[in-house]
Each structure stands twice: as structure tokens, then as C-alpha cells.
Length: 510
Image 1 (cartoon, rainbow, N blue to C red):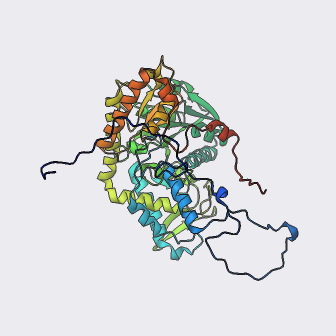
Image 2: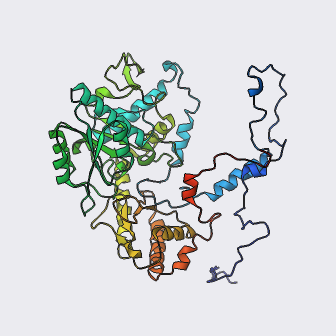
């Protein structure tokens, strides 16, 4: 071959490959049994020292074994490595879950968080001044970004933040002698935690319908407002990916009857650095640090949901919180120091690992970078909207915010379901978008690209979606019914698993 010639590799158009191998393995996709199925009695990757016999004080109640499987160290390492290779994560591919903000987590965040991994929450305050300064500095960033004067840092996640906000509203009404306020208005497109939180706090939930344009019905809100309403809970941008254009008018109407405006801040990443929630008339709002500010998200945690509060609600903020006096940071931890507080919502001071990650993200971006986060998130979502609107069915006309909502009308007349379509996406190497939410749209397909995905990634995703949509419209039902073909496990009975979970391993010896 001459030097002027370039090597060219072309994937064959079609190859018949048997799905059966001798071992069950498929190349680097290793068939992996459960760890208990690999148990070998007496085998251990660790040498334990002999211990002297002791007299048991619990008689025959003492366990003879704790039931852990016996494996060598290489077996353990390979087992969990193989399991990790079967998972889809943000480090391996595009994760377009709408309403979840699954975006890149910069490694500098992790490095900074590890600096504080050895702290203990019961250390003397004099020995953790740096940690308290981080909490105070993060609080300052959050109040600056929202325009609200106070923030409760301890809530553990979004739903916990909602609980905090509604509890402070309840306390504020009680202190004002407004105990008759027993109603909370909630948009029908809200996250399910909104009505659940209000009900958990003893309120009657009144649902406000959405308009055909995907936004809350302002006239319906005004008609529902009276002296019995304690608050409205509204997400902005909402779960349809749209900005509530009448939010200032809504806030004014809510305040006119003496109620408070709680904003679900799950989608704050769409407006961070661009809009001050205080200017919109919001009284309190939780902020998902693990979404807006990039910390790890999903799998049940970890999370963090600080709640910013207006001056009227600040006196009722939960304990503990950090103050600076006499030349040092101090924790206000007791009701004797803050008698109007709603008290503690969780143990200790909040999610320290999330605090450090979020602050590292904020400081590395700066105010201009955070503004660009919102701009790029909205740009990417609208790019997908424009490229796919003639191939999928767009739920609402006009530009969106940080996520774009499609529905299953493009599948009408076929034998293919929204779930079938999502399963086919998995074979193409993409995690499916959020499906069937928000509930106000039938067969919803909610896509959030976030600000950190490249145009090349988005173009590949868009091209894949167009090809799949065309195949679906041709009613190639067999193709979609067979998907996914290339995953370690295919279609599991998720309903049965949720309703009848098997939570304990039972071997043949049990």
C-alpha cells in the first residue's frame, strides 16, 4: 500500500451471528450469575484473625452465620466489574431523561468532596470551621442566584425540600392565626410529590387544570383562591418543559388572598443565572443540588434539596443553620435559640458531600458560566425540538425550555406502543427518555438533553430517532416487539418485580 492511500474500514451491511455461545458469554459481555450462586463454603478473600471465645449474653439468639457468600478477591472484583458493565450510566452514554437532568458530573467535584470525607458530624464546631464555611458560602450562592434572603440547607432531596417548604408555610399561617387555611392548589402537571407533600402536611389538595397550551390555567387559579387557601405549588419551568408566562400575575393573585407561593425548583437549571425567582413573586423554592449543579443523581441518592425562603418564611426555617458571630461560624441547633423554627427535619447538618460538589460546580463556572448552563440547556432542547417535530408528534407548539415533550400520536394506526419504541432505542445504545410523564399527555416522551451534550451526540440521537420513527410508521411491529435484542437481559416483568419483590436470597441449604 502506498503512503498516499488511506486505510478504510467499513462495517458489513449484514452478518448472520448466532446468539448462542458455549459459555453464554458474548464477547466482553460476560454472563454473570448472582453473587450467592457463586458461593463456595469457607472461601474468603480476607484472612480474619482468630478471636478468643467469649460468653454470649443473648443465649441461643446469637447468629451462627450472617449468610454472606464465600468468594475469592478476584471473584468479587470481577463480579462487580461485570455488573457495572451491564449498567447504562452518564459516563457511558447519552441519558435524555426528561425532568431528571442526567448530566455530566465534573471530576473536580469528586476530588473536592473527598477532602471532607473524614469529617464526623459530632466533632466540636471549632474543628470544622472549613466545613461550616462551605455550607455558609453555598448558602450565599443560593440566595444570590434566587434573590431570596434565607435558605434551609438540611433537606435531603427535592421531596424533602417540598416538605420543608410546606411546613414553614403551615407554621407561618399558624403564627398569624390563620389556621382555617387548609387548601393547597397544585397543578395537574406537577411532580407527584407535590400533592403527596401537601396531603402529608394535612392539607386538602385542589387540582388546577392545564390549558391546551400546556400551561396552568390562570383563570382556574384565581377562581379557586380564597381565605381558605394556604399556598399554591407550581413548577416553573413546568413538567411539560414550558415557562409559565403568567407567573407574576399568579403570584400577585395568590398574595392578594394572603396565601404563599411555593415553587418546585426541580427545573431551576433552565433559568439559573437568567431569572431571579424572587422577582417572579416566589416565597419558597427547593433546589435540587443533584440536578441543577451536577452532583450524582439517580439510584435512590445521594441528593440534596435546600429550600430558599422569603423574609416572611425565614423565621420558621428548620434547624440547624449556620450563623457567623464572634469571629467564627456557629450552628444554631436548638429551639431555645430559634423558637419559631419548625425544628429538625433530619439528623445533623445536611448532605455535606453534595454541598461540596455543588459549590465546586458553581465556583468553577462562575456567574457567567451558570448563565450559560441555562442558555445551552434551552438551546439543546430546542435544537431537538426543531429536528424532530416533523417526525414525532410535538405535544405543544412553540419553543420549549430545557426539555421537549413529544407524545405517541405518531404511532397511531400502528401496533407499536411507546414502550416498544423505547426498547428499540436501547439496542441503538441510547437510554430511553422519560416515558408516560407528565400524565397530562398521553404516551408522553419527555426529552432533556442538558447543556453538556455535544452537537455530534445530539445529531446522532436525532438521526436514530428519525430512522426509528420511520420504521414505526411503516408498522414494523415485529421489529419493535423483539427489542431490545442486544442487552444482557431483555424484557423483564417490571410490574411483577415491583409488586412481588424477592428481597432475600434463599439457597438450597436454607
